[in-house]
Image (cartoon, rainbow, N blue to C red; front, side, top):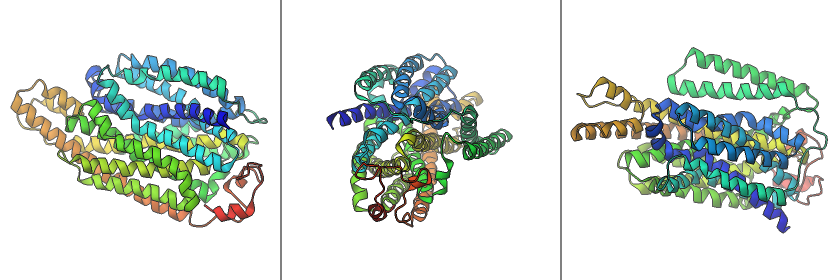
Length: 525
């Protein structure tokens, strides 16, 4: 029993680091922009390429882990993650940093599904598994929310590359713990690894996500339409191929179940609001309000604390209320919190911002933990990697799309700012590229012109953040209503989601692999 929970602590360390790496860059963006002379678009790519690449490879890596063993994949991925982190810390240009972040996404894709799949194999009792998944989800959510705080502490004393360099020693600890505590877990009859399916899933996800990002940033263009068409075609071909294969990368028939589709959607949307909000609030605190990096990280601490606590409490909440109620409540809370930020301006008092982050953390902790547990319980143990990959893909797509969509809105509004008269055209063009650029330019202007430029830039950035918060709030509240409708009926008596995949092969509270029809019907959704 003790060894089982020690193993969970090792897996928790891995996902905590993955979560931190997704958002630790938020506070470093002004320093990177100044040091590497990045444009606003390059900064967006530096911020979200990690999540884009990670998301495109999760299904592939989850399936690979089912075949070669999740422990082996985790340890190999941790080694690669540490090596690439060192290279990322010393990237000499924006292009090199984008490439290094992409490689980090490849390494991260090997870690994320392996951790959740190993939990599925280690904890056969459903009650223990729910608690373990709650701890795992809390670590993931806390990592995402703690990223700015960790970055703030490091940036107070070191250069921006330190936010990546810390990955190396943590991964060494993970390797030692993994070798001594983690059991191997794989599908005993995995079937062949289908390379065409791997390619189709990657092309499909990257094509669609790129089209969304590019359209949000620049409007509808031919390149975005072509990317969307290529992505949609690849995903269609991927689905058709999975339906024909005897051993698919993922059983797409799971998505025919309304409950399964609903929780996957909740997984994606619960993190969408947090990721975009944390990324741009970090810039707001530093560049608009003048906080130090550490001060900005501390300002975002409420989200980390509540996400951690309520991720664990979610396992207890579903014993008192239905999963439908907990999921919907979580999404609605994130939406309400984002709605309170539609009035944000350059002098918004911190208590309003801190309260919004507090509520966002509660909502994320509840929604993500419950969604992950339902997804993981929906398939037999030998296909846990594929199910974990679905959960993680939704999370990482939410992370990337949150930065892309909210960031594109903020950037678009910012570029419409009214620049004080009398400034050279070259200065105006650079100032409209990003708030960080405007701050750098102001340092070389006369005091009166510098103050006027900074006032205009900060007001425009705050307006963009307010509009983006409104869009995010509307999306989250609509999603909460949709999830409530999708999960309005209980599952048929004696049947759980996993039956769509493999009848009779999944764990109940006894951990003996048999389905308790009465208890399954009682739990419902």
